[in-house]
Each structure stands twice: as structure tokens, then as C-alpha cells.
Image (tube, rainbow, N blue to C red; front, side):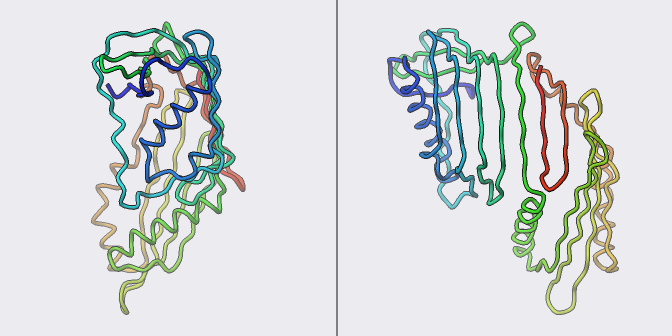
Length: 282
């Protein structure tokens, strides 16, 4: 029932404005305490009979933040469904220019066509939408683009690492992140971090890795290495050699991980002042 989205009480939405308002209320309740600025997001819908002709969501200015103690509401809805009415979301457009994720500005553009769903009515008078998994007979198509600043990404990773280390009494005194493009879908990553604990232990740790996506849309992680010039830290890193080797050479089949009706046709990485990841579905 995880594919069920509650949309209030009957009757189901019959205008775009009504659907947009109900979607905003449902999402607001589901992400309470973890997303700020949702009331300023733009949601516009156009209905054509049972189908949703277009659904445009602009999340510009929205901020995703770590939970501050208020746990999000479980969005699970488990109604006693008494009727279903098949429909299609013909075009979904999602954008943010930008939204903020843990203080990192993220520019997002995505478009999806042909997503099937069903309007559902429950015995208690509630209504909602049930997402239908794509299939070979009913595929979805679309594209997506995500871009972040290279400097912004490095700053965010540095901040998260500093917080994680401080919990163990370790101070992060230096940090550098390098991402170099080595092909249309390939990248090499290098991280240098200087740490200090107490008065007597300080060290520089270097981590390197590479990632590549082949024409079959399989990701291969390789060249994973950890090292340090400090003999004590170096020995600790050597003890994790088995875990590092388990990561190196790992293969992730992106196409196989998707449902039958979702076919990933291309992935592209562009590294400059911005790091841009784009994908095509067809």
C-alpha cells in the first residue's frame, strides 16, 4: 500500500486548483519538520476528465533540513478501497532553481510522461491516488538534470564530515575535495582531510576512487584507496582493507534496478564550476 497517496475526503478532485491544494497538504504533512518553505512552492495542475493533463511543481526556495527532533509523519495510508478509476498523469514537470539540501543549493529540472495511476475511493469516505508501476505495455519517458556548485558540494561534505568526526572527539583541521571528469560518464574523486585529536595525534588522510557508467548503464566503482602518512592512522586504515576492497570493483546495474516500463537510455556527467548529472528515459 506504499503506492497509495491520500487526498482528503470525497469527492475526488475535479479541478486543477483543488488537486494542487490537496497535494500540498498531503506533502506538507508527510515531510513536517524536514522541509521548510513548502507553502511558497508553486503547484499547478490541469485535469482532462480522469486524467491529469499536466502537473507542474516548482520547488524554488524550498529547503530540506536535517530533522530537528520533530519526527516526520508516517505517510502510509491503508484504506479499505471500494473503487478504482484508471487514469494517466500525462506530463509531470518538476523544477527548482534552486532548492536547498542541507544548505547546498541544488538546481533541478525533470519531466516525466505517461505515468499511470488510479483514483481510489475508500469505505470511510476518503479518496486518493494509487500509483501503478510502469510496464513494457505502458512505459514512461522523460529526462532529468541535477546541478550543484563544485565549491558548494565540497563545503557541504566538509561540514557533514566535521560534525561526524566531532562526535568522536576528532577535529577536522583541513579538507579538500577534487572531482575530475575522465569521460562522458566517468569521474575520479580525491579527498584530503587533516584531522587532530587531543594534543598528540594529527594526521592527513587521502582517499581516492573512480566511478564509470558503461553503455549498458552499469556503474563500476574502482581504484578505491585510503592512505595516511601517520603510522598509527595508517595502521587503522589498513585494518579496513577488506571493506575497501569490497567497494572497489562493485557493479551496479542501473537498468536492472528499474521496473520493466522504465528504460534508462543515457546518463551524462559534466564537471566544471558546476557538477551536472543528466539522465534520459525512453
